[in-house]
Image 1 (cartoon, one colour):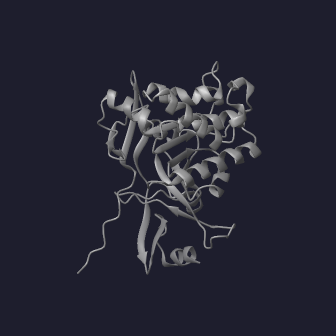
Image 2: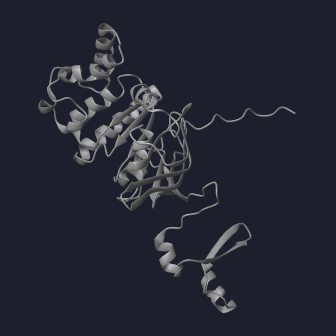
Image 3: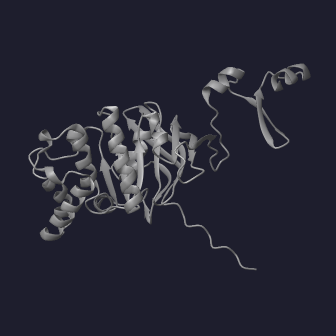
Length: 304
């Protein structure tokens, strides 16, 4: 019997991930057993309310913070056990980061071209090679004509496009973006998202975007929603035909490795489910019912 080859491991693999912040006698649990898989070359988004843990997760993926427990691998790197010097190397070589605040991404007294050259200079890339790559990146983001302009001489959208070029300067396999369009109008935000789409498609860079913008579902193939430090739902966008602009969107609840399932709060409120619920298999379905549903009459009413 010929066995099919095993599928490649995910590029990003988080399993039962915890992050606890401690100060004096106070503990804040930002991540509570989070599971997440991201395939190499995927472009996906993470959404969630303030306090859901999405920014904490992004900082850990960027090597700016370390988890308290669990497992997290990016490529062949174990981010839980890496030493500080290895984290510095990871941040320089393996990941590009785009901040929400446009001014935070760029050095204010340097022109666009010089800003893109800085990460390569820190890596010891020869000056001529760095200049050629910086020029090519400026062309990719459509700003060749503004290579000498300083950040104050660029619009917000232009600044973010230069920031994307800076993040990709050392050709990292992972691009992280924290609310990259949070300070932009909708038309400019569309341009920035379209640019990241194109770069993902042309270069194969894995892109993870944290955003409040629900319109992101039109731009990426998968959206993971976070709640209370865990992934709760996934929205998957499926294109049925190559030229089909109206893709089918499906939403799924996420089941982690421990069998935990996050049920949307509005569903729990509608059924008056609090701490406990009745769970049963009915044919090809798993049914979740309120604890107080005890009589056949109430069961039948609930099914209808």
